[in-house]
Every structure is written in structure tokens, then in C-alpha cells.
Amino acid sequence: MTNGINNTLMGWNAGYGMTSGNNNIGIGSKALFTNASGDVNTAIGMSALFNNTSGSRNVAIGGGAMDGNTTGSQNVAVGFAALNANETANGLVAIGDSSLFNNIGDSNTAIGHKSMYSNVAGETNTAVGDEAMYLNVDGHCNSVLGYKALFSNVQGINNTAIGCGALQSSTGSYNTAVGTSALDSNTSGGSNTALGYAALPLNRTGFQNIAVGDNTLTKNESGSGNIGIGSQALFTNEAGIRNIAVGYHALWYLDGKDRTIAIGDSAMFSSVGTPGQEMRSTAVGSFALKNNTTGYSNTAIGYNALNNNITGIRLTAIGTGADVSNSNLQNASAIGFNASVSTSNTMSFGNTNTEEWVFGISTAGASRALEVGSSASNGNGAYLTTGGTWTNTSNYDKKEDFSDIEGATLLEKIETLPVQHWKYKGTEEYHIGPYAQDFNKIV
Image (cartoon, rainbow, N blue to C red; front, top):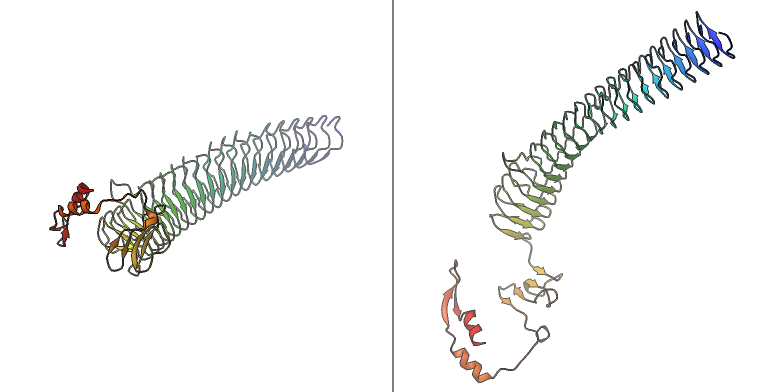
């Protein structure tokens, strides 16, 4: 030491090369050994800050801590060989045996045994946990917390991993994993979000997936664009894309199918799909389409809707308990509470307790089973009585453009109308009367 002031040195050859450095503390054999002009450094431990020349405001505690630092400043290294290879990088925090051991990048924080051990040029990373981000070389803007979190990342950027083993095998970027083993096996998959114990644990190359809940999207490997929210939602899916499952066990068995939506506890639980045929069904409500296996293009909205369906296709059920009474119908619909349809190509409105149907109004008139509005603004006023008679409205105020007709002439024309005995095609119900076309001829 020659001109330095306010320095405290203790140990064999501590501060040996110091010339003008000020306000330094070196305790331990060869601590601050090469320091020439560096100021306000604290080195405690054998060879701590050994090669430092002009670096300032560093704290190195532990044998070999910041051993290779030369001009790097404002760094903190606590632990044996922490920041061992750093030479010129600034703003680093390394706490733990060999943490940031090979680092030369700036603004990294590593806390834990061998955390960010292999990092060379990676910058602005934060790793907390034993061997967290161990293999990172030049990845940047990553934040991890947990044992071996983001362990295998080499160049991946903008990842967040919180939990033991979260993103442990990942080399991808823009992933978020929160929970033990979340995205544990991810390799090159990117832009995934996994929240929950073992969420997306087997994902390797899939991207843009969202898994929220324990064991959600558990078997997904290459499937992309899927959303699973709820414990074990989309559990079996491996390669299917753009599916949405919200609820415990929703879409549990589905794999390899696209663009299917299941929302509700166990919604579409048993659906596996038909080989070569896309599922593309929608189920909203607890147990909706729960027992469906290979049926496709179905829509079920309501608690237990289409619960009886197994292989039926192109079905629609809207309402709590709206269902089919046959498990393999096609092109059938049931609308209303406990509405049921039993044949294909059929629509059922209401359950067995339904007595009236109305269109355009809130309630039907007395003794009317079906009524179509009450005027030209909301229908035509026609109705079907409970006795089975269809009646069209004939009120004066619902008509216009009146003109008188000469009675004798009209009667002559009516006498020319042929009156026959006939039946409608496909029925055995006979009628007596003229044809509508003949009426038009005499008007």
C-alpha cells in the first residue's frame, strides 16, 4: 500500500497490491490482493476480491468470492466462490455457494446454492433457490423462485417460474409457471401459463396454453392454444389445439381434438371423439354432455344438459336437464327445463308439464295452447285452442283497405267451387272442402 487512506486490512498479503484505493476492508489471506485504486470495497474471506483492480463499492464475503473481479462495481457476493469469474459486470447480487459462478453479465440476482451457476452473458435475471437457473448462459429477463426452477434454461428469455421444479427442463421463452412441477418438462414450448401444482407438467413443445389448477392439462405435450381452468381439466389432452375447459374434470378424456368448449364441473368428462372427425362441441353447465364419448357438433347449455347422450351428433339442448332419451340421435333439439327429445330430426319445446306456447307475447289467452302475438307488430294474432282448433284473428282493427262485394255475384262464384273428400299426404285423416287454389280463382 502506498497512498490509500482509511483502509482496514487483516490477513496474509491482504491488500498486497493496493496503491491509491480508499475506504476498503480486506479480511483474510490475499483478500483484495491486487486492488490498486478500487474504493469502498469489503472483502472477507481467503482470496475474496483477489484480482480486483479498480472496481468499487463491492461486497465479497466467502473464500474466493468475486475472485476474478477486476473493474466490476456495485456487486454483492456472499458464499464460497460466489461471482467467482466475474470481471467487469456491475450491479450483481450472488448469495450462496458458487452462485453466479461463471457470470460476466450485468444486473443479475442469484440467491441459493449454485443458482445461475453457468450464467455467462445473461442479464437482468433473478433466480432464488438451490440451483435455480443453473444452466442459464445468456438468457435474460427471467425471474424464478424455487428449487431447480428453470434449471435447464440456456437462452430462453422473459420466463417466470415459481415453485420447486417449475420450468425445470425449459429452454423456451415467455413462459409463466407458478406451482411445484408446473411446466416441469417444457423444452421449447413458449408463451405458456401454468398456475397450480403439476399444471402442464409434461408439456414439451406446446405453446400459448393456459393451465390453472392442480394437474390441469397434465398430459399435454405438443397441444397449443388450449385453456384449462380447474383441477384436472383437459387432463388427458396431448396434442389437441384450441380447446377450452373450465371446471373440475372438464374435458378430462379428450385428446387430439380441436376447438371444443366445456364449462362446468365434469362437463364433457367422457368425450374422446371419433377418429378423423373433429369434436367441435360446446357444453356449458355442470355435467353437461358428461357421458358423451364420440358424439360431435353438439351444443348443451344448462345443468345436466344432454347428459344421456353418448354417440349422438348435431344435438342441441338448452335448459337444466334438457336431454335426449336415446343416446345416439342425430339432428335433434330439446329446449326448456327437463325438455326431452326421443327421435332424430326433431325439436322438442318444454317438458311434459308445459301447457301453452306463445310467440311475441308473455302469456297465452284463456283456453289457448299456442298463440302468435297479439297484433301485426308482434305476430298475427293467430292461435290454437286447447281443443285443437286453429283460429286466425278476425278483428276489424287488425285489417285495412276494405271494399264492398256484390252478394249475388259472390254466391254464384261459390256455387262453382268443387267440394271433394280428401286427405293430406302422409296421413289417414280425411277432410271435406274445396281447394285454396279454387278460392283464389273466384276472388
